[in-house]
Length: 165
Image 1 (cartoon, helix red, strand yellow):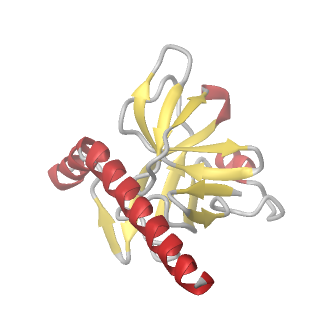
Image 2 (cartoon, one colour):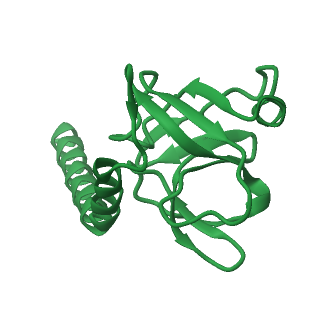
């Protein structure tokens, strides 16, 4: 199971579905599907948006969105740092970074997506601005999530304390 910012998602596709994503990418040269989960909000909406993933060649770049496997789960998250032997990856709606994702784990890269019926231009200014601003705001988003969590825990403790009286 994949945990992201206190929300539970199960990756994107079931391992029991046939054919496997790897097979589709190899045989068809692309994989098209809707997404499942909230880890890439606000860019990709749960069960509403359609992604296009294609095989990749060579090293990926910062801000690319690879499809990779973590155990038996398929994950689609953004590269936020490229290292010599691995990548640091994080979902747009996540606060925990994932370290040590290697080229061997990566199956393909997001090359397009539809938001509803509208194709998003991933080479366009709007998309590029979104990616950079959203990535730049990561420290603020992480701090917000931590403060929100602390307040929630404090409220829970207060409520639990009132029940004991």
